[in-house]
Amino acid sequence: MIESPWLYPVLFASGLVAGWIDSIAGGGGLLTIPVLLGIGLSPQVALGTNKFQASFGSFTAASYYVRKGIVDLPDALLGIVWTLLGSAAGTWAVQQIHPDFLNLLIPVLLIAIAVYMLFAPIPGDQDGRAHMHRSFFYVFFGLALGFYDGFFGPGVGSFWAFALIAALGFNLTRATGYTKVMNFTSNIISFVLFLIGGFVLVLPGIAMAAGQIIGARIGSGMVVKRGAKFIRPIFIAVVILTTLKLLSQRFL
Image 1: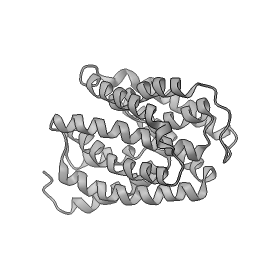
Image 2: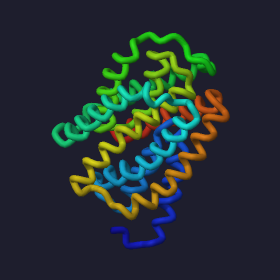
Image 3: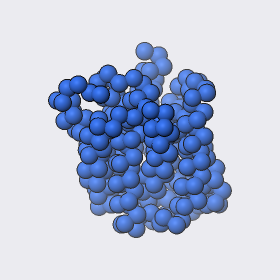
């Protein structure tokens, strides 16, 4: 338990900011996990509590995108199923294999995404041409990115958005909406497995979740109103910060 009640406003504020960031470009865990570790939680409990509170933000953003017609839920159902399976497998596997070997590979991939998004033309308001059959895409990327999110996690929102744009031709706003649906799927199954393992603190998680809900609602509303020109600079900034964080963890 957290002894000082003054830490709860800090948790709420961090959830608020993280929910806003997550609903636009992903990467809210860059803020929330250090905060949870900073108040004295063990790494396992910090990760479990983070999945708990992040589930509220990703659900809020995903449901808003569905209501606004950005996401066609029946169309995303196959991806949801395979992401669920992949995330469950990844959450199990991380208990068997240490994820350190990903510390060098993932920053390289994230840098490549940042460079592409920085210099590529801004995706228009209309979807482009798909380069992969949708069913195969959902099976492959649902398993791969679901597994990755359960196993390691940093940058998964960036990978989802990039894959949706590059393989299915989605515009950036639509890719952001579908990304949040898949994020919620992998978050909720990881949370359940962490909860079963006893690695979730409920009260701190609820404090952050309250902020997540508000931040996610504000952020997703801004995405729908402002579109790709608003998303791209935040997306690139989050990718770069994620890369720097992983490199600092690896070498510092």
